[in-house]
Image 1 (cartoon, rainbow, N blue to C red):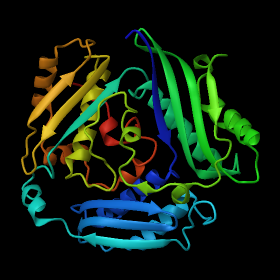
Image 2 (image 1 turned 60 degrees about the vertical axis):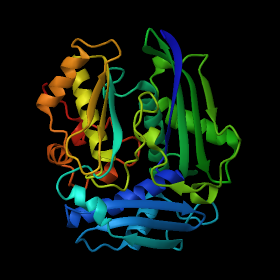
Image 3 (image 1 turned 45 degrees about the vertical axis):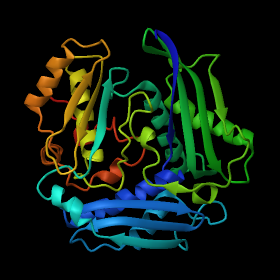
Length: 369
């Protein structure tokens, strides 16, 4: 299609699903700080005033899970049990066991921790090689958090969502058709006060002027009220925002979530590696957009398949690109972990506003191919 609309969404760190992702990644990072060989698969569930932590840990690290959970809730800004959750007195339930010895059989010898398919994607629509809609949605969500934490808009609360619809012409972003923001707020302010503050301090601060016109639709809290939020307003669960975490639906997703998993889980590590390769295919001028898929079998080191799609924009054939990938990169779990240095406690940096497009992360580095 030459002319079309595409929509992506993002959420703030106070969204109940992201609260859970943050807790799971905080536990992972604390384990890795003490034991870089930690095997971690942690899920978090949040509802009302209760946080449940469950999963598997195989580690020599001695961690205080309850302290990690309460600190993370506090950092996000939840401190009012009447409207969301309070880090000081919420209930915390913990049910953690060790990794299954059956899984360990394959992982201990460098094999994949599970079967599955993973995707990586990049395009030249933005400076960080991300699709335009998800890039704008993330920037709006991050700005919502910034103006709240800095007191620029003091009546905002942690929970929030953003959504951006982009009009494409000749396969390039032409203008923004719709901006939708829903943000939790104190009961003492009116809908118009929220709308005015969000437009002035969030939308105008993020969206380029040349991408908005008099036909752009702007919606702020379309229900008219968003006071109850966080786990009190909706349940949260680790891994439920996988499209927000990746490419906003603009590229396919293998289905596996990231947060709470150490790098032996190829759901996470291989997706990071494929983003790195796809980004460098585009950055090196071999294509304007690139999607890569690999597949793994539990316990096996090498991927079962590699597929590259440049959507007709490639300066090299897709067969040539596949061969280039095979020659240049070690796609075994151990090879990926070593290449991207994934035993470091870097995962809390990834939790919010997308796992891709952040220049400080190792898989975002541009290299010569």
